[in-house]
Image 1 (tube, rainbow, N blue to C red):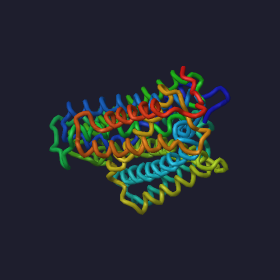
Image 2 (image 1 turned 90 degrees about the vertical axis):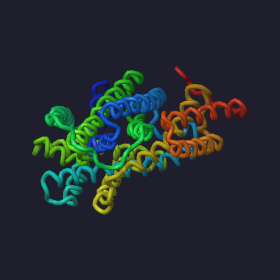
Image 3 (image 1 turned 180 degrees about the vertical axis):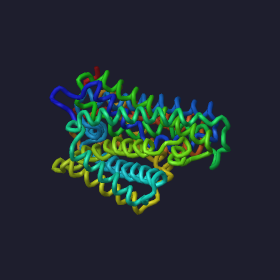
Length: 397
């Protein structure tokens, strides 16, 4: 993934461009259609500003400490306590791997037939080849693939708005608060991964800024494509949108390339996270195993609607990063030399419960920000009232 000099700004931008350009992001954008164009775009942009700000903060921690994402988690929750989140992260990455392969195979099958299960196998195999080769060894091919994706996606975007009349929007309605949560949840799903890449950055702040800005802009674009597709064609099926936009082979290339470049990151980071569980694990072998299991899941399970999965990710990882941010930027303490930080684990559990309760309340600002602010306040108060024995200070720049 990196050389001795660390990952460059160009490599970071390319990496996160590929992460954001995915069918899952376009599909999620279609769920915003009941809000209309204006309110839908506001929810998309506002949610991404919040989500990417959290993504940036998490990346900074990894970049400054030179630790992987799950190793930074141990700083707040203890050496063994951090393993809980490493396991949860591997589970969510396995889920994303299956979802991405399922979405890509469904779209490819709609465009060209041959059967969805066969396309699941093709996509799984391509991702495994990408993992085995490694992005560093793919070199120029990766740059060409990203350039092709950019041009093809521009073509798809222009094709959306050639129809002047809006089609009726089908499906259930969605409140602005839940739409905001769906917008926050996608960058939040990358939060347990970003430090896997910023840890080797030449300049942590600049690299993390480039990563989050590129991801945020491209992700908003993908959501907007989904929103525009639903409003223009009355379609929630991105493959049907490609057909109606006149994309044939070009549509298939978008599906294949976007699925491989995005899912590679999920599988790769699952391998990195596995080392936080057991250091003897081989990251590449775990990445290949996660891809295989994700492919099997995509073949056997119906994975089309993943909104509940996104909400679950938010409820798990938003309070986790709230505790991390409080410890790193405010209290200056960490607990990686201990087995468990019981009070931080209890604070995370409280934040998880708060998040789920706030989702039921359907507040205008959503659930993520209020839940995180309450968790951070609880964490700060807990640390103020509970002196730490032999505290290990975190250097904050």
